Image (tube, rainbow, N blue to C red; front, side):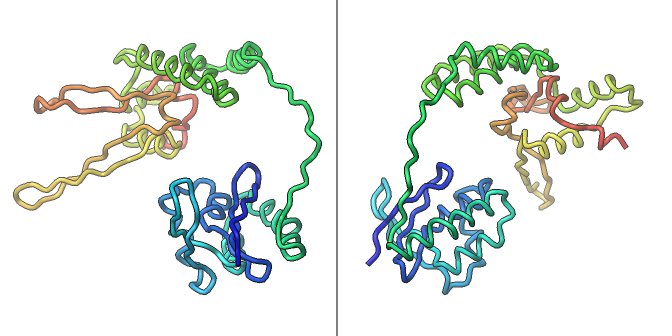
Length: 281
């Protein structure tokens, strides 16, 4: 009979529910490590090509109670490792082959040898802020964007200040969310052309495509069908978390009717993090 064991690989949990004779792992934990960019709602896409004999579904105890979850037997585990191009795949494979699997087969369990704890030095908030200011002072980022960047960096290292950091970032973004400072993709293309001496501005469609490629926004295609059955397509842009550093959403009255529509607008500083030069020709 197998029991749930939880191992930790680089701060990520790996749940083992097998036995020394028949190794079995919670598939979601394996996918999360081998494909760190994957959306947890799409983990089944990565498991779909694993042969049926190499995977299963078992009831697993979770914080929300028992749930039936996909599992991987040893061949399925090797199958996913062999198809991952993540830099973490090799260290993960070494950890399994050299530490975990030999220990399970030898003793029936895997025990982590705890090293002697060393006192950890944690910089003060003042030191973190000073470090951030020193790094960012040589950039062309605006003072407001520098402040937001430092706040988010400090927040990552000191989670206890998260509520205050979020309030401060929100306040700065609200102050900065003006038509004067935030530009449309058309205006961003014109500004780039002006700065680089181009005869023509970069088209807004190209600016949007580059912003999307940089991970600053995502696209939703809205399809409408008129009374004659003719379809039209419209791109609706949404800011990503990364994009919120440079962009904001403004609400304006539509040109052709009274409906309020939303537009993504950008600080000029965004030109420091996207490359429009490849689109000049």
